[in-house]
Length: 220
Image (cartoon, rainbow, N blue to C red; front, side, top):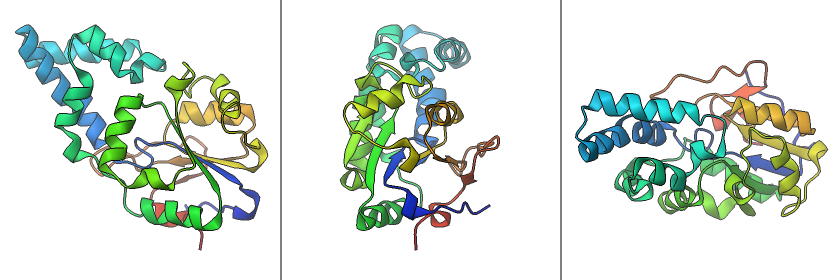
């Protein structure tokens, strides 16, 4: 499916980061494999025990800002989460054709805003390891407002720092709950990025317009 976007009607592009612009394998590997190993070593547990504990704690926080908050997990697990993430930073990479897409938006004069649930420390590591940062007019972390994209209030909070017209705005995200709240808020153009990583299953877009490769949606 190739989404048909009328770029003449889009002034602002809101872009998610993890899974959408960047390969989600880094985050999946960190939270599902690397962190349980570190937790097991610190607490003299088996890897299976540590994995069960961490996965249970993660599930309990799903859909909340804590789920994405490195400070919360550092306190909860008594581990330096940001430092541990840096040990794996070589795995961080953008999806193919992302830079071409971002460069084209800049060339067209679109207002490009990152809106990520990622903690600022995590955002900093990813900007350090990729070239995406230079293409954005503004970088917004949901932690700036204390509310995740799963909460409809964030879309009006963004207006306080970067005003935009929802009727002329495109949101691209792999988070279906974020797409849902954006739709409720009135953001006109919504795209689900289904190909979060070559190593992970594709997202079921559940009725949202969707794409796999940024080549499919890069303006000509």
